[in-house]
Length: 368
Image (cartoon, rainbow, N blue to C red; front, side, top):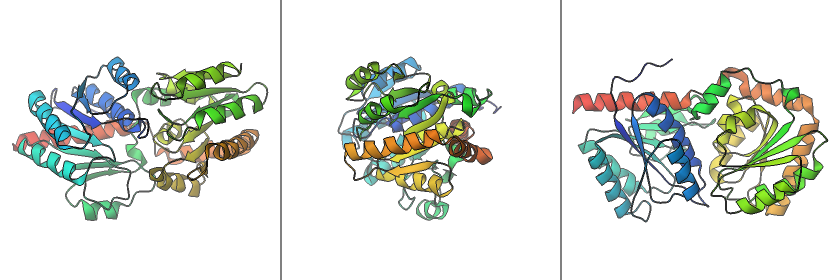
């Protein structure tokens, strides 16, 4: 148990966006940290230029308010609006998460926060070779070059590696319970992220559902902002072995029941690793390649690189690999054992991040 922060009730602004092309991962991992911050008495406030209504409702249901900023994202109006919110709310720290924030935006935010004696934390998934203008840098990837981050950001506190994978509180709770034996898990989990920018959910569902062995069911998870949600739901209703979950609050429970997960190689990887789920990862974006390559090299997951394929070709390859892996119970058991080996993703990453940020905010406040 981590003791509550002695800094009582600070407001922390969380600047992140979500769109159909960008996906929802930036906002969702920030939600994990927001939960941990709230547990320590802080008041997280999301600030966004682009946020789908379904995701805004998800944040509201979780108890977090959202301040809408003037666009375009990363533009002067965005930065001025965020700075105004910082002053108005008396924010003691800012979290920045997104690839679309320019160097000028990051530097400008850091300068404004410095005048308030408040730190900036940046999530990053890159190679670590560029300045991020942040006092705390978090990259939970499995293959992170600490030397590169240190060279580009010599004064930053670095929180690197899977121990900092930001998982929501539901995963911490699920990890504290005994997991079902792998042979008892007769569900396949299919998830390509909140918006599924590659559009693979529907073609994979249509191919996999009729081909699964008797007695095996499939859970398909999509976000409410997925543009194909209605088609996916309709397709799922055609197969009695398939359940489509839209904006589910029970992701950890679905993973606990999964004998195999078919997932995009994004933030979901940490969630699956926490619950020792055998994984077939699909790389659909360049920023996913490094982490996916690391887990493939260590034989902790099977990986398909779908970049450059059309949807039909990708869906055929994914379906064939999924069915073959499901049929090989020994291979799935080995993947489950390896992905959990060493417990590098223990569900406490968001708590560690929140603690580091609040400690930094407290120190900055003491120096002001």
